[in-house]
Image 1 (tube, rainbow, N blue to C red):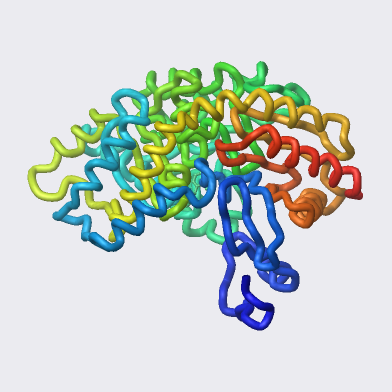
Image 2 (image 1 turned 90 degrees about the horizontal axis):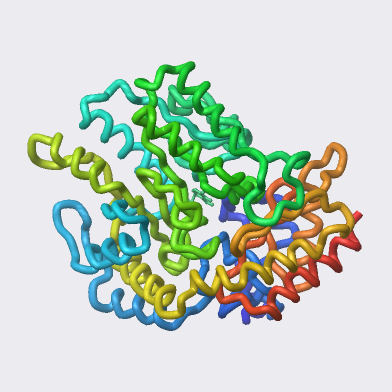
Length: 441
Ligand SMILES: Cc1ncc(COP(=O)(O)O)c(C=O)c1O
């Protein structure tokens, strides 16, 4: 542990998505991580009920991943990814494709969820142009959607604070479907809510308004995490698929948080039995040990884009760090752990205990809804008048002091622990929440 005199100056770092002034007046600093736990710089042990930021699915400090990364650094630290390759990038692409629904087996590597989203939107535009439909340029997202922070992602995203400062620079021609969240109809649903499939039909109105021939793609998170855990109503995603298919519109599932076991399956597409045309990936793909992301693309889309190019580069897009050797090493080691330890099945097996523990909080002070799927739970609190988010912020802070790291968006507490969670961890997380809720005004 650092002694207090070794502590860094906090002023230079401009922290992302953080209340910088508030944080720096009472910082929370993590120093170590292993398994289900973080340790703070003061030696305080904190259970990770959020898998970092929904990303450390196999738990922290996995030796195989550490070894894979350090061996790769020694063997070859970096290789350019334009017009030259390294073997592990191809192996990693095959390993990722094996986790995807059949047919979505062309893999484009990125470094983050935001890059995956912007890449997927560009692939959609490139596909229609290659297919002789360059007039399909509109991109449709959804209210309360989060698709990262690139200009493409915030344009199709539906979170107003993420958009308003940049509104003059949002990409033109986007529109948004309504979100599916409805407490009156669906409060305290376990798993997928019964009510709300018809909300997908709103897409027909948007399509009619703009004319289907102008629309390139619809992007949704099959389960929205960052805006407060919104679980898709039964039948909703199926209807979105039917409508997009009918009008020749590509459907993109943003699975940056849902892929790799989070809801007890390889992808949300697999769990819900709905196959999109593209899937965006990041986070759990490398267990977050190295920044990494990818887009899984239906083969025919890839083939159409390649075939339409006369010669040379077919798709003018890519990153210096696409398929970075450390990322591909981390990806392969991570996917091996998922497979060997059957962690997606494990998540499915633990989900009932997780659901029961989450719903056992019903009746605690301030709670107005509890929703869950797989190893994701959202606990919505009534907002304090005139101070949205303040109550959940207090719960977050008190839980942390009691050794439990949770997340909150607005007044919804979001839980998404590593898939290695045991019953004793579930007890600790929900037991602490129950205690803390009783002390919050
Ligand atoms: C659904 C979804 N898409 C995209 C992103 C952006 O990912 P990143 O922060 O890696 O850019 C996130 C991050 O939480 C996400 O939840």
